[in-house]
Length: 86
Image (cartoon, rainbow, N blue to C red):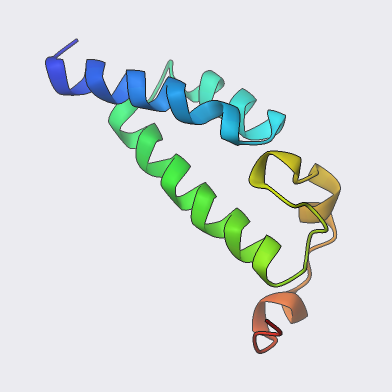
């Protein structure tokens, strides 16, 4: 593993605790097929998406790691298209 990938793997491992269990599980599963650099970028996308879900009040969670899978299961197109409420 090259130096950049090793560094990204360390960063990825440091970031994982900030996410819900299902994101951690997904990332761990994908480590077999995808590079740590790619997965690190995925976590940045997850962070932005989950931050938006909290900001818009779609989830009652106070932090990203508290988001429940049910919050995502109940997400509807109207939630995405609605103007910002915050």
